[in-house]
Structure formats: C-alpha cells, structure tokens
Length: 123
Image (tube, rainbow, N blue to C red; front, side):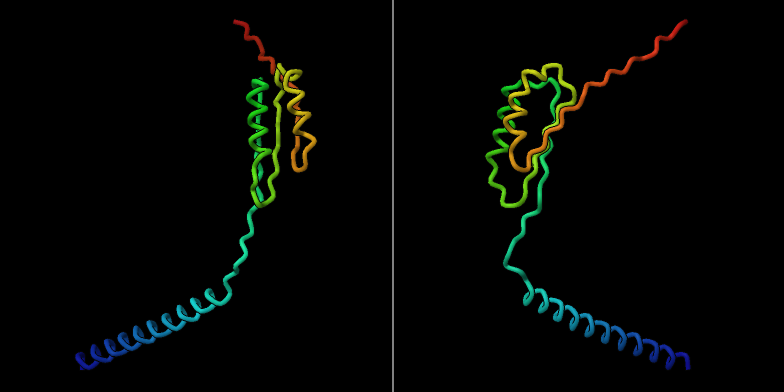
C-alpha cells in the first residue's frame, strides 16, 4: 500500500513537472515572438542635465568648460546649469556667465555669498 502511494506521488510530481516545463516553454516562445515583432527601430535619446558648479574658478578654465559643453552634438535634449556659489572673483567670471547664459537650454544661477559666523565660546 505504501509503495503504491509513493508511486502515485512520484507520477503526479513527474506529471506536474512536465506540464510546468511545457507551459514555461510555450510562454517563452510567445514572449520571444512578441519581442521580435514589436521591436522599435527608432532610438530616443534621454534628456541630459549638466551642472557646472563654480566657486572662485579661473575664468579661462570656466570658459574652456563652457565651450566644451556648447560644442556637444548630443542628439537628445541637453540642458546646462551654470551655478556660481558666491565667488569672490565674480566680476572676472561675469563675461563668461553672460556669454553662455543667453544660449538656449543654458541656465545661470548666481547665488549670493552667505557667511556664517560661529559663536565665540567663552571659557
């Protein structure tokens, strides 16, 4: 009686495994066919944001960086953010910021310098 029960359990397990493999194979073929027939030939480039953060940068170095970004031929949308975090040499940087800040998809942010005064501890 026990041997018959074991044989039935093994037969059911083997049958279920076979059904599982057949269903899995059929689904994989269907999915593969779907991928092959609906594959798009057009590539859409994602948009890219470039952030140039500067603080007391050399104006020539900033000019080279901005010129390099301006020459990019990226097929998607490229937005550039030029952010000056309160540089002490802002008057020297102003001509670079003004030259590139007026371009399409270029944004400039000239932040004011914030000084934090630390409290003096008294012993």
